Image (cartoon, rainbow, N blue to C red; front, top):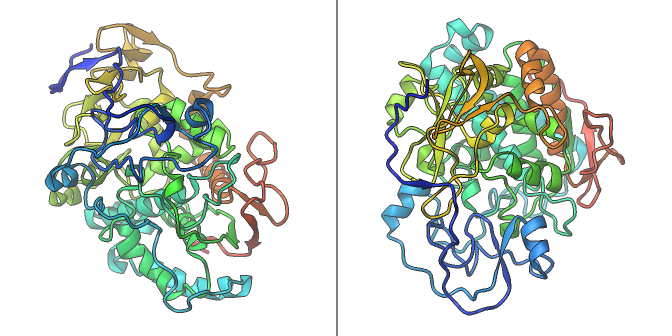
Amino acid sequence: MLAISVLVTMLVACAATAPMLRGTPTNQCYISQCGCPNAVGAPAWCDWTSNALITSTWCNENSDNCNKNCNGVFCAVVPQESPQHKRSSVQARIGNMPVDSSATHSASGKCAIEPNPVYTQAKFTSALPGLKADFKALFPADKYDAAAEDENAGNTESEWVRSNIFGAAIRWAFHDAGEFRADADDTFGPDGCLSRSEANSGLMESDVIAQAVLLPIWNKYCDKLSRADFIALIGAWSAEMGDRSKTLYIPKYWGRKDNEHCNNGAGRLPGHQLGNAETKQTFMNNMKLGMHEAVALFGGHTVGHVHTEFSGFGYQDSEAERKANPSTNAWDETPGDFDNEYFESLINEPWLNAQRGPDPTKNIWLVDEDNHEKTIMLNADMDVGFFIDTNCSDMSSTPIGDIGELCATDALPGGKYGCVKSNGQVVAGWPTNVYGHNTYAQCIAYIESNAKFLADFASAFSAMSSAGYSVNGGQLMLSDGSSYQGNNGRLGQIFSVSVDRFWA
């Protein structure tokens, strides 16, 4: 059954080798994506004198702090000048991120209307009608309104617009909140601020949707609500607006504070290649969410796409080809609809692990069927529904997963659920105990009930976007009935606002 239809253009070894280092001994902590100074195969954007270095004193105290709690690598080297990279090769890997700039990448500059605005609930509420109208105006009314009422009335243009804006807004909300770490003493979290790291590429560049399309809306109302509140709001509205059932409601809060200096938060977002280990580090250890919330938030992939020009993942089709086929590089076949289709796609399609895109250190999973839409999954997605092998690395020791592995509901002899590795080894069954949680059963529950997925996503999004704050002086509740420990109040308080659901 394991008929590999993809040409693998690189050698893969499942025994990782140590990266080559330059320098003389010392003790410093560097973000895990870059590794130790001048590591072979490190991303081209890594600068070990600035954005690769974790500057927190606590992280640099010892290897346990660095490796286990700061998502870093503890290195006994002094960084020397890294080799010069040609600009063209950098552009091919991470798009238009200004890698030569030393400027901190916040979500924007300060408010141009008022230099130091004082935000209040009344101001936040007064901005909502205009914000909602301006957001809806981004969509072509003659096509979008019909598509919102009836998916059969839409077309590829409305699907393309919906999927790109919804996907960018929801990803922006997660990345803004995802650099929170509960046991740190910094102010990173839902703060309107992104670190200058590869994980955030596609969100910071001047010509991407977050900056060129969404941020100008905030600029019109920046004297009335913070960037952080705007990012959480626009993410919630995107999910609600993309819900064709018009039943999703995500609670709204105001009071988040903006940061301007963000780079020390680098390295905290999960990598896509290592699967559940990265999910645990970011969602459970750092943000204090549970696996149940993490799986629900993965459902945000039901809208949007990976973008090869920024992340290095995905098919390299032209923009014209992607517009004509909006499911290309999406996680499911309806990337403009916010629903449970992501879980249907994850569990029920036959997925083959294959290298794609300009960067050979990255891989995607594609559907192993002739003439199928070019939907994709990443290791982080697949590890929720299957026992995939994330241990294999490429020749530069970058973890990529087992290229050639096939996972499906009927992948095994006798039509059973599981995976077949590239060497023919069979891994039967489904993940029922991922850090104490049955992720497979949760996926099945969402396939059976879109309403359950929407309700769980609303709860998880509320917790994620309130990390570090107390909410109305207290804590939100997680799905297991416990108080959300991420609401530790370190960043201050946020307060609920009575706002109708988007389609009210």
